[in-house]
Image 1: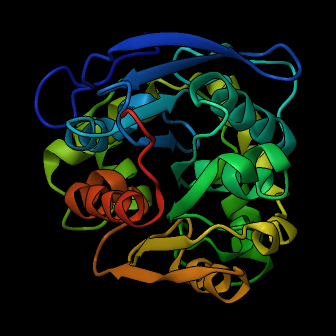
Image 2: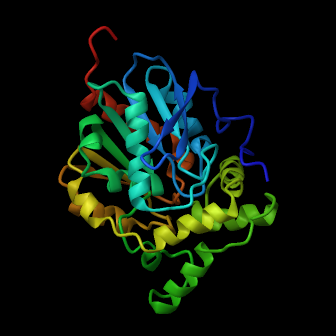
Length: 305
């Protein structure tokens, strides 16, 4: 299957980057990185979620790159970043540190936005000096730090051992997702998006998710099943805003409010009525505006920029 079968027209077609580079992580993993916008503009780093790619941030890249330097990268095994033998939250943190080191000057700080597993990447890296020195502020979209399977409402039955068991098997499906058919769109929309999501939004997400190799999807599902980053939340000292859709089945609003209660410097939770898990696609203008607000408030313009 073509791993880059994203849409090629409309607001969710990925813009062409100004430049591309490869960041090398601590274990030698190679990460595809894109840079968009003016080189001297204030930096924004975007970390996508499970089964996605840089294409997921197309709307934010297009809007923000007018006057920001937008850095987006493919998590290992996703998009154009090769898979690795190992998967863990610590490796995600290594990868984010490698991207920050490869794209930011020593005296630069960026706003870092993470969606879903991208937010978990931020939490995993939160206590590391390299992350703290390069982070001005954070936006966490549709994410959680622990109990991801137990709190998920993808399986529409009462919470308990049966729902957790069924959810674990649904999310840990090993089989290929196959082509993007009308049935596939309906399934993806039910599981990951709000009921009012426009067809072009569903199409964009379906193409991105279906492009993720089955072995990569399964491997990272096992990491998410056992994830516990509550300690990382408490170490995330940068000013942090949280966004969640009220119809999010994968990371329901309970996660957002738990994050807000534990974060040392939380700027509040924005609940988006009727929206699902794919908030940067479902509410592109709002997510972009929140990132822009964080940049204008917390990122200092470098001299000579």
